[in-house]
Length: 92
Picture (cartoon, rainbow, N blue to C red):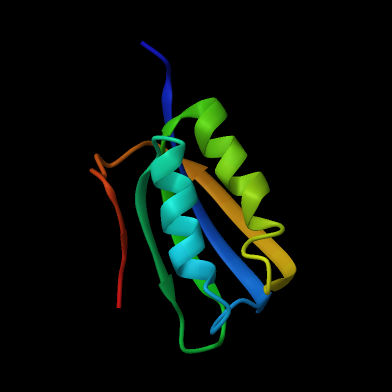
């Protein structure tokens, strides 16, 4: 079994109102990554990715570009132990 990891990500830039969350959800589901994504009041997007290390790393890399209309300025990421996320959802 592949080692599972968790990445907690904060993305800043033009990342709200540009389908960033929906595209993140669809991409994560395609790659078999569990977790969630949501908008923050300060204009950033927060996300958690859990799954095999390579899949989680690919999602963190993906966040640097995001959806086609997004303009990402910064991605902060903290790694930790998985907490058992199941499926991927948009949180409000």
